[in-house]
Image (cartoon, rainbow over all chains, first blue to last red; front, side, top):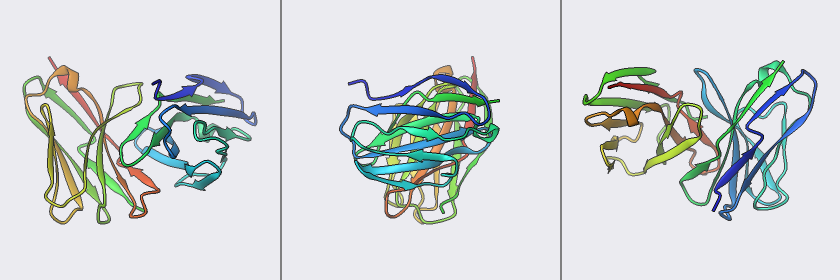
Length: 110
Length: 111
C-alpha cells in the first residue's frame, strides 16, 4: 500500500492564481481531511470528509474548496491564492481512530 | 472548539536524559492522540488514549491521560537522537468528525 500520497511536494504561486493540491489514499478509509501547518500554530483543520459525496468545513475553511467524488481522492482547491495561504498542507485519512498523514505540500504564495 | 496547549514549546536535552511533554485541553477529552513529526516530514501516529487514568507505552515512550481527562503527558526515558522531532497532541470532538492539534513541542537531543 502506498498509504496517503500528496502532490506536488512543493509549489510556488503568484497572488490570485488558482491550483489544486492532490491527495489520494489506497486504504479504503472513509474519513479524509486537510490541514495546514504554520509556525507556532500547530495543525489546523481546513476541510474534512466522512465519505464520498460528503464534505464539511473545519476550523479554517475560508479560501479553500474541496470535493469528494471517490473514496480514494480528496483534492483541495485554492481558487485565488493569497500570501496568507503560504503554509505546509497535510492530507490525512482514517477509518476508526488513527490518522495516516501524507508527506505534505509546501506552498508559497508570492 | 477544542483548544490544546502544549508545554514546553521546545526542549533541548542531552542524550540519555528523561523528559516530559504536557498537553492540556480546554475541554474534556474523548480521544487524545500523540504524534511525532520529523522535520520536513508528515506525522507519525504514536498512541491514543481514551480512558481516564489510561497509560500506554511504546518502546521508551509512555503517555498518560489524567483521571479528569483534560491533561495528557508524554514521557521519554533515556532519550536518543532518534527521538528528536516535533511532538504533537491531538484530540477529536465528541462527534469524532473534527480533530484539533496542539501547537507542538520541538525536541532536540544532543549526542
